[in-house]
Image 1 (cartoon, helix red, strand yellow):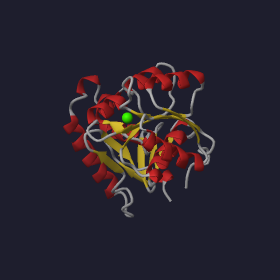
Image 2 (tube, rainbow, N blue to C red):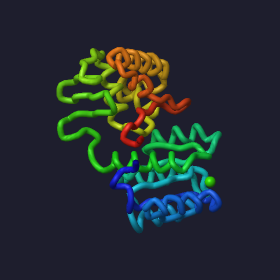
Image 3 (spheres, rainbow, N blue to C red):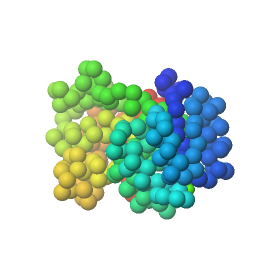
Image 4 (cartoon, rainbow, N blue to C red):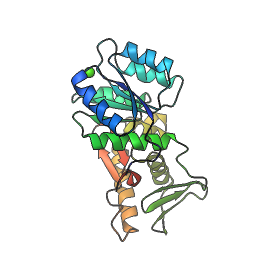
Length: 241
Ligand code: CA
């Protein structure tokens, strides 16, 4: 089921390959999105200046300028969600785009249902603060109480160290979207630690184990999805079913 706020959202689709762009734009249009299509960074900048879209789909390999220039341009002024569409072999560009403010990425070729699910997740996130009015972050059976600094799985309290708690908080605040290793490391350990990826591997393993021990249903076992070379995402249960 797609988010109720999705239909009618205005998407700016930046992609120079017309054979790729047109069928995707047609599919998104058929699902109720209003799609403005452009084929270069220059056109994208003009379209952005003329009318602020609700979300930007951004191909990084553009004929005039790098798609990263669009990420930087938009982030100077707005938090508009940016979903990067990258080709294989552009791993470094993709991570750079995420570090500079893009929200998520898909690697070509991707399925249209997956694309729509990602768009819906980003629009939901943009619709308001991730934490509800109660100060709770919840994904499936896992809930995190920001005021009490407590984590429960199916109502059962889980004891976490301060770093494990912070790591879970950053991930749960962006369900369904990827968080880069650099962003997680800086948020949890500090700016001097952005290269220490092995810390993350260890802490994610511990989090997985502690949450799974408190979860008889087994539903949280696959909560964290590793994105090789990029980071982690929390499986977005709201985008399924
Ligand atoms: Ca391209």
